[in-house]
Length: 138
Length: 175
Image 1 (tube, rainbow over the protein chains, first blue to last red):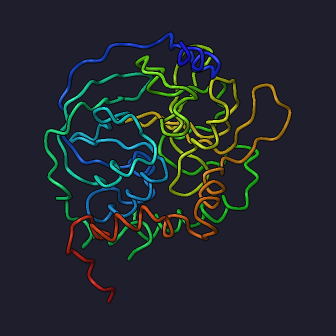
Image 2 (image 1 turned 180 degrees about the horizontal axis):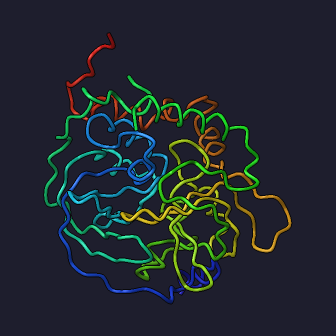
């Protein structure tokens, strides 16, 4: 009851637009969402790893970018619902992963509630020879 | 776009943005961007979408967004500090109506809002630049010209895994 009261006081209340998602398996590279869409730098693989760590720890939402270029924005992993500056997620920056979870699509965003990381290949896309270390060089 | 051109744009934006009062959204030349004053209620994304709610919109640990009058939800992904989000700028408005001056980026891959200034709804005060991340970071870690290079957690991760994310793999020295 105390929690419910706190939620109401905080104005978070209970969302009117909550929805059920659908089960999905998503494979792709973990990357910060900002660099992926801003076009300000090359945002893939080893060249982007350092930048992606910084952005993730700066609280920028982290997504999985699949082979088609679609972005799946991660709101939780397992029981861990911290999606801002979570060191666990930052450590997976630019890793190639496969995850199982629930997909919620809303107003142009694919939100992903990850249940489990089925596979983590680490960083496998070698881009630094061509692109250096983004965005400032070494 | 050539790497040199992208870097030039990045630095121009960083220099201009640092001195800007953020009174109106500044275009960044990002594909699909549209200057916009976003109006609505600040909510925690996970709570809004799934009913998995915690007090105070997660206290800064959950992604935040704005629910507009028509019910649409805009995730606020970025603030006015390099490499940083706007959660510190919005968390104090949890559950409240705001006006957020920024850029709506409707990329086919994802739609996000980049906020440059925030104020309470209906306020006649100027927008407050969305730079609270740096203030809070410096309160925890001390002054730094580039927070990202001085961040203890980032440095721990990069020291362990290397700047390329693969232990033992180092970049070639510059010629």
